[in-house]
Image 1: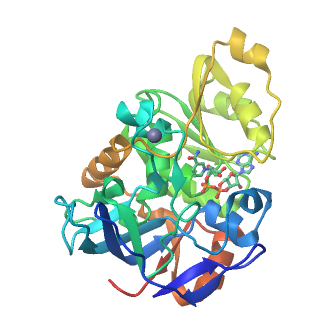
Image 2 (image 1 turned 90 degrees about the vertical axis):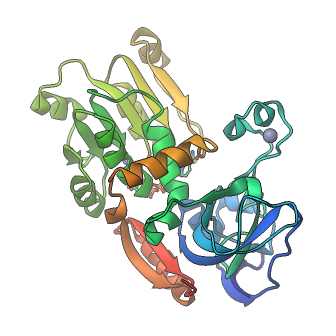
Length: 343
Ligand code: NAD
Ligand code: ZN
């Protein structure tokens, strides 16, 4: 089968013929229809410091996908060939305290699809049956292809109650963009987006933001004044990984404010802990999706009409992967989809 492979330590990916993955008795084999490009894939492609210490080549990359099941192991009863599925990209151990308690997102032994095991940028991908999400009828395949990052957005956006609250979203990358309609649906009042890239601010407005500002040009205090907000943001979703953005969120919260932190900084960040203490703020780190509460919430949100599709701005055939990666890297994009030509 054809797959996008990190062949050796260093920049680049190669489209290669590799053996189709073998499945064990508890696994399913999926024919990949569509995939989404994630920031993680860009890190692996460019071979930055994180990739160099994390990835062991050769490796088939990618983890955001939708496809149909073509084969199941002898122990698998709940899935059948033809089922339209996506995969939870975090393969957990199943045996630790948290896995045993049904809190698999807290597993400390997680192995990432396309990071620690052969991934989904391929004509076929194999996963344990415990990692499979069977899509509900009527799902749009492009939306299904990005359930993984949509799940990050759901997990973060619904980490705290937002009904009637004023919400700050810092960073309107694909995940921040998807968080906007989610908090809208959940009843937020104002949704203020902070994002330096103009293309993404415009997309944020299309996806339901009250206002989208360039943090280099406009202060959040000024926006609060314009909107008639008195005490600061009730909830912030930090989705940029940028130190200035996190500090700015902390200094613009109402007392008792809650900050869900999804963005991954490149290094340590210095924070004003006095502000956190005296304003009685809660900071909560978010990693991955809750298995499978986030997945259930996504399915419910989609079937009750929220539209995340505007986040998809570019579509490529998998053979044009270089152009697809360039589009994802450019910043003038939302989510970039690669089609594997099998749907
Ligand atoms: P992205 O890199 O496309 O989006 C980040 C956005 O933040 C960009 O549009 C960038 O212009 C913007 N930004 C930069 N500086 C800013 C500032 N000072 N203020 C406001 N915005 C600023 O990434 P994404 O795919 O949307 O993911 C969002 C973040 O979440 C990334 O940091 C990513 O690494 C992280 N992530 C975390 C998890 C997790 O499980 N915790 C999973 C996936 C992604
Ligand atoms: Zn575990």
